[in-house]
Length: 185
Image (cartoon, rainbow, N blue to C red; front, side, top):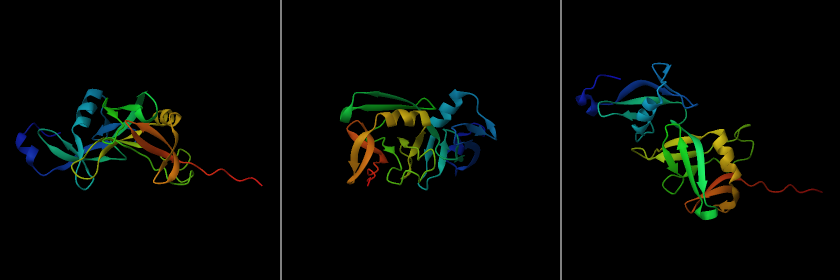
């Protein structure tokens, strides 16, 4: 990053040499950032602009960075309670806790045929925080967290479509369409 020049904070954002890979690894000039505290710090300053671009906004400089999918991974799930009052708390790879709720919904591509997303299915995403426009900053659930979440799923409906989903903070989040039972002759 450039020197600590406060005048640059208000300047037009430029492209910074950061990349966040799909696996959650942050790179600076092609080299992984090894210090987790630095990744956590940069992660706390990340937002999205009104066009969906990822913007790293520090007190001294703002710039666009490349993100392969989403900047964060949900790496841990803790839950309390059950049914409508269940509370699902996720921890991201930058140690940010996020409770699934109306303000932090779980987004899943659930109303598609089972084979539409390939062998692994379509992973769910969690809104971590709002961006500067209509595009939020999200975390993708890791496979192990997704499996834990699936174990908590129960039947429900969304827009009249039968599905499996989870409750958190009195909100139902659909995860997968319920398949109609095959009819045997």
